[in-house]
Image (cartoon, rainbow, N blue to C red; front, side, top):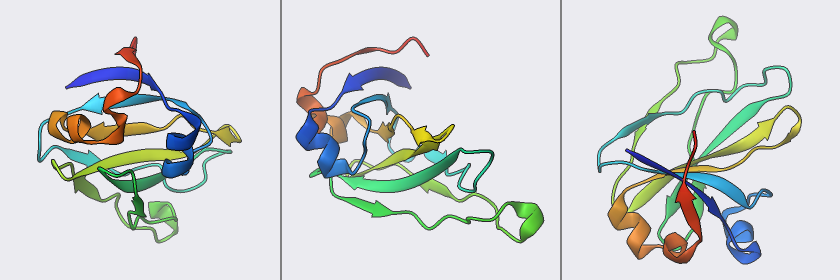
Length: 123
């Protein structure tokens, strides 16, 4: 697993539907399972999860919006593949959160993010 910080162009950020242009790219093996947690409001923070195609088209991942103590189910696990990446965005402390994209090396090479400037992440 490799982590990189990246910066999106304004047009790529609009394509992904995110307001923040800086983010984290996590390169994993195909089949890696990502747990889609944090989908309910918790003092101003909430995560939204999406499938992302190589053309950067997004599609929502169905996640419970209620915490378990109020009838919400468990957080689903979604597998990352060479055709589809998984992105976490949302709100953190009342402001737009930095996007985190979980993808494979093959997905990254074939996507529009291949040319996005990136550097190894400190986190």
